[in-house]
Image (tube, rainbow, N blue to C red; front, side):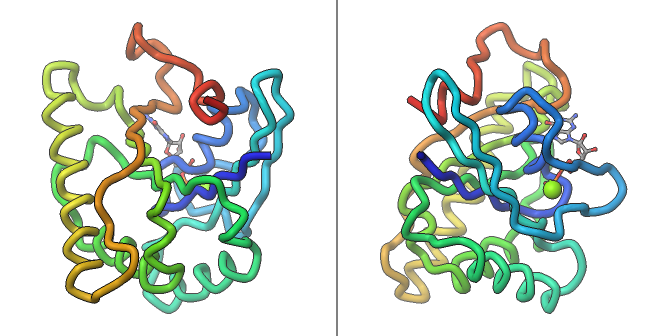
Length: 192
Ligand SMILES: Nc1nc2c(ncn2[C@@H]2O[C@H](COP(=O)(O)OP(=O)(O)O)[C@@H](O)[C@H]2O)c(=O)[nH]1
Ligand SMILES: [Mg+2]
């Protein structure tokens, strides 16, 4: 069973991604309040293979103390050695590289260890919210911001292993289904 650990800020679409992947409403999602207060394991025996997605509480929802509590919860509920890959979820349609995202990346790295990025996938949600003509530029900008930040963070703090790049990048829209004609199912990527 391949286990994937999802993390990212509140409202970026982590729980929705679980639903998109399993094509069923199993993880609670919410427009108004962060609703994942627990670390939830969703396992699915698919014809393509057995996959487990671990949904976690959204970070950067309130203050840093709240984030610390969520990270302790993740540490106590998840055996990081058993994780096949981590999935960092963030929105494609944010134009600025926001301070709360930097803080989230810094906290994740310092509390869970730089090795969480060893085999990590960057999932960019809200793809349909960016007009087609601007999508490629938005993708490059988001990837560059996040990767350069993690590279600098691990180098300056002498963290091992040094971050280089994400293993893979997936463009997702959890709500709009007809935004691209080139889509493949998330499940096929997770089991590939
Ligand atoms: N348009 C659009 N809305 C999304 C997408 N992903 C999530 N949402 C919406 O954003 C809100 C927060 O999503 P949720 O999955 O609860 O985020 P989480 O806090 O990261 O688990 C919900 O209202 C979702 O319907 C997406 O890819 N596109
Ligand atoms: Mg959630």
